[in-house]
Image (cartoon, rainbow, N blue to C red; front, side):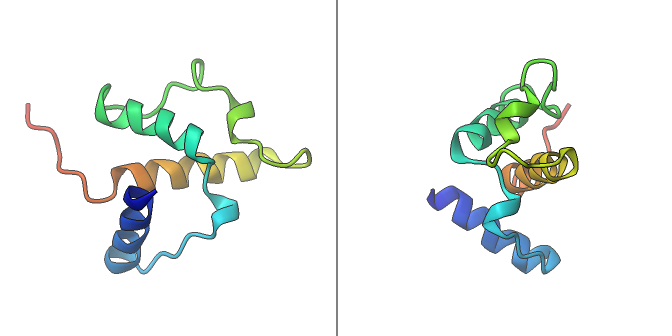
Length: 85
């Protein structure tokens, strides 16, 4: 949780972007996104990471799920250095 708070502070400092909790994925989904970013060095594969993981309420639209995905990737990549090679 402290990593997420650190990443949110970094997004505010770098881009003046304040994310509301409703627009971020739950912690379990954030960990899966973080795996794709730190181990695989790529955007999450949506054939393996299902869209249902981004649904919090029953009436969530597809646009809201995409926002959660993008915000989760931004949170995961905030402050990370580029891989060389």
